[in-house]
Image 1: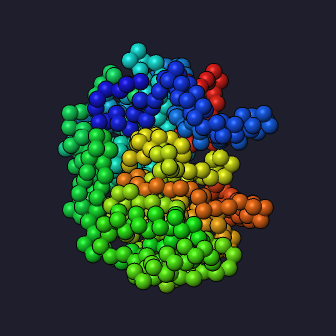
Image 2: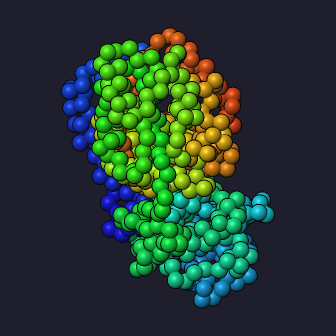
Image 3: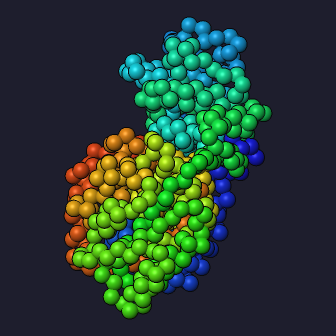
Length: 540
């Protein structure tokens, strides 16, 4: 579906430009013929009855695409007898909210579905501390037919500043609305402004209700003429002169001033595979515009003469080469280097990561150096120019999954999440930035329970428990040749299974539901690929 050319609709363009069925099957046929080895892996898994493995292999071969089919709209009429008013901000400003205890802000082109008013009233009645509530929507086509689901995450101020992911349909408790008031100088952004002001004083008063509350008809009505200016003014107000706003359509990037950039310590564990390490370090040197940098290479018993010669050369060039002998323990190596690092900002980088754009570290540092932010991750691409990492989603793929894995590298992401800085539960340590004092305050990586796998997830969750948010910064882009230096053997598989058990034991309840990923998505397939089944659903 091709949407009207208004920046307010940019968050809905995740499914635009996807190939139709004919082109899609032609592309699959070409890839199957040109990559017979990978094709055979898919066929062999299917013949063996291993459907999950076949699906995963097919995703690697063909990539992922959105196949989201909204459920039918609920039937019924308008609810009566509720102390609830639905009105636009202009109507509220001109006529007040009347006697309604709950006020639902809306806008032209948006409408509550049958049952939504009852659901909103019930949610407020059940929670006296609830101040604001928003839910999900369905985008309607030109003829009013359901076309796209808008499944929103839990409230995230950073995401809302970057893109209007909440929308104009938000229910507020009347007493709160009277106290905070609406700002008529922000046409089209009144609800977002009110939410951000409420979040600054009582973040727990805002809740997302994971159910369909409204329809969105972009072909029926466009947002106010000043929508883009209002969004920018809102972001500039938030920065309060400490940075600048960059706009790309309907998605904003808040660039924060760093008057005194600290020394950044880049920590790179390695064992032989000199070609990977050399590509990593040389790209960092050529593609990092950070003013003060130290590189620490943790050498885990490299033996190859070429590797040893390269490490010797690096030491002569000012790179710190830290011997880390013994069984490979990724977490312990990083911890040891972090203990000796001189930088106020720690940047953990795998030896199979390649920097591609000079501003990658600056973009990550601008967020990581905020007092309330813990770990910060980058958008990582694989060698096929597909998404390798767009944040980590809990409870998917059996345990955890990288968001948007195998989607095209140029994809905007669901609700612009591959363009907008936003909160996630965890990010990969393949490229992770965190302030040194925060890292040390939570004890660093857990080298005993998570020597190789899930140490990044565990670190992010412990930082979260300490009050810090984890962010994905899609503007920081690097390449990751994932697992290029890993070799699986029976011992490694046993260790991996033990770390899976340890993660479940420590974070079992947290793994059950990721607040930054909607429960309406099917957890058995790649993230943002398909919704949970409803009666009558079929793939598109």
